[in-house]
Length: 187
Image (cartoon, rainbow, N blue to C red; front, side):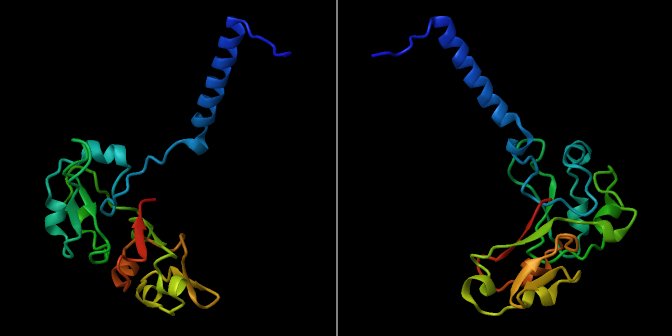
């Protein structure tokens, strides 16, 4: 048996080196968990950390929304609970910007260009989509998209063009599957 025995000092040094390597592995940017919230804020929202500081949870933005798609977050910590979020799949956002007009705190701000507003990004679940999963041609998401952001691969399979999609929710709203094959995600 020709095993090398480590001194206590060598053993501890090798153990700390391995712990250091482990910490390095998880501190690299590619391993940092995504800090974006899963919910969608109303149009014109400032960055999340500023939004939380500025929003006074008054509810006027939800009251003025003609589509009634602005609701209040009922989960999360005490800072985010009660803040407005958008549920674009209930009825698409038409970016009327009335919510921005009534926001007195600066949590929602008018953009320089209305065309730059983006709620999120549509994502298609291929496991649920009729075209991708069942082989049934369905073009409802393409037909309903006001930004022409839904294109077709091989003239059959819907795909989202991220540069064109504003996350309005039209595609999610019109999707005939249950659960919906299209979901708006935070970007």
